[in-house]
Length: 490
Image (tube, rainbow, N blue to C red; front, side, top):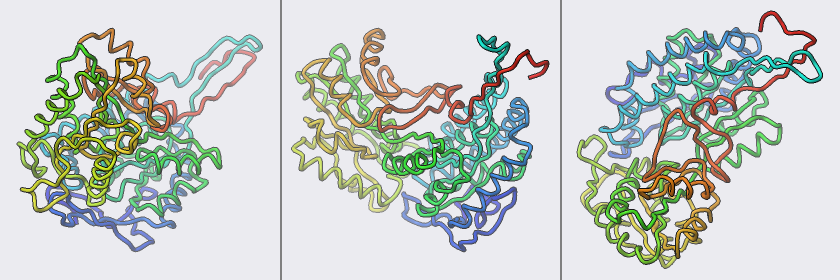
């Protein structure tokens, strides 16, 4: 069972060792459309034994298969073939995303196509990355520095951008010569099936890529499997801490892209109306369910009330609608538990003494689906729960500051450090403020994204980076070979 317009050849099976196999668990996962609250897909659910099967297949393919020793340029060609196959299926992938989490249909194809383009950039690293370097030594004649694959990778992706995030992990793992076990979110498994079908069609050797959709229990079992050399995880900080503990106990590698509570500092030179348009429209992107979301806005006290009024005006003009409505600007939250989480934080905000300026309710005209109005709290205490904890919904906190230095202090007063913004017409000022904010990415005048550039967080927002050449480094090990003479061939 799959959504209309999405064709999965074996939704009732797992992809392990190059074959589509029935799950030993005998169980399945149900996917619910957040617009209609109806089940729109069922796929196989892996159990603990299935996880062990997948890791063993990946282990065999790494230890005894040709992929790790295939020249990187040749690996890149296989990835390019996968990208060609996936590009043809972008309309399907777009429909899957809309059906599973309620992303806006009007934005979906462009988003998924961007992910395929990103894969092509990673594939190109097969020829561009410094896989082997010869250097003159001080104590030896020649040192050869080589980059070799880490081993078996467990790629665990979240539900909000399931195709792009999983594809990123797959592409980096494969170009590095690793094998991978894909574990998509149980809410959004369909894209991973399409990736597995593309890998099979492109001729990837058996066991190099495996697919095991599962819920939390078997996922934890996968992370604990000693055959897994590296875990690449994108998701909540709570889950990331658990993965870090497990990996740390056996010195397994891990890359963690976790939560955020990113701050936008509005400098005094930036027009109120322009700031309101950016902030009010940004918080509605994917219903606020973006790890890099600008969910805190910091402005000097004398401009606070004016900005609050302007943001509220923007929010009240946002059109809420079903994902397939071409005029909708705000769709549903991805699932019932996410709606309940957002409602809980709105109640916490009210209790904290912050001013609920607008929103905070389910829209009256939507009697079905997991919808929530865009919500603005003003005069927020930065130490309150709504300012410190990731809500993952269309809720914006407006925080007053004494001056610019105080705004920077407030921005840094957080356990997170994933993203940020500086609202100013002065690029030098944006740069200077950005250097003082402890976060992995800072954009001038909005939630800026630049695919192909390093992305990741400071503090509890994660470990490691994805994007560009930096994204490949966590998937390789560096080996130093010390020689009495330069080898003829490297």
